[in-house]
Amino acid sequence: MRTYASILLAAAVAVTAIMPATAASAFPGARQENQAGPARDVVLVQQSKKQVAQKYKRTKVRFVTDQAPGTVIVDTNNKFLYYVEGKNRATRYGIGVGRDGFGWSGVVKVGRKAEWPSWTPPAEMRRREAKKGRILPVVQAGGEDNPLGARALYLYQGGRDTIFRIHGTNQPWTIGQNMSSGCIRMMNKDVEHLYARADVGTKVVVVGPGNRQGAVNYNDRGVDFFGTLFGFGG
Image (cartoon, rainbow, N blue to C red; front, side, top):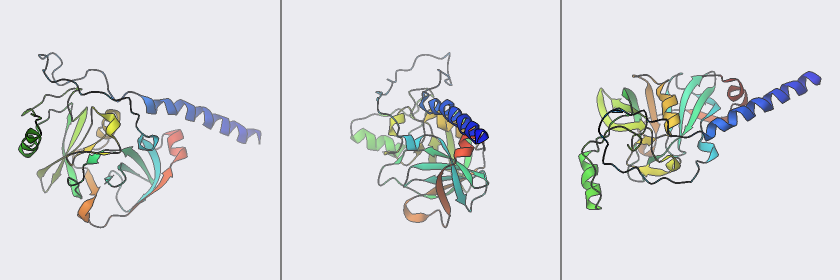
């Protein structure tokens, strides 16, 4: 019994040490593409004090799937992205996805990656926003005020850019919501974590409207307590 009590005490201390990490700032230091370049005339977006719901914070989960380790599964309905670890485990991230009418699904691959990427709004988006009186730049340099955030993974299909991305955001309070025009947004600290693990060529299964991803089986069985405690899967 004394040994069992010691294990429980150690587990409680470890969990207490882990919890503050989830409240870390989503904005790293000023690591921008053009640190020494001229100041931009883009105004930082208005910040919000709204907190991201606990369920959308990065978590190791017990996860059963027919997809191979290293695969990314994006559940747009429940606003989760999974990185499959193998051995019935995965890392689960909270995401924001496209507004109704911009949802999509399919099987794609990471075609390229970029740190503090520049943003080139599609011409259709620029025209649409212009009708609302909002003029978007042709190209916006990377940085904390950039809608693509700290990292971007560009999704390709058949060797061609789909125009969809998994990227960071300068609006972390939008995680768990339908806020963007089809792309998949993550908190900056989470997209940095995924970026370090998902290489170019990584398979990405996006489960969403139309079921164009085909048959894919997965079952999130909840928090992997020991994986979280001991860091299984990185």
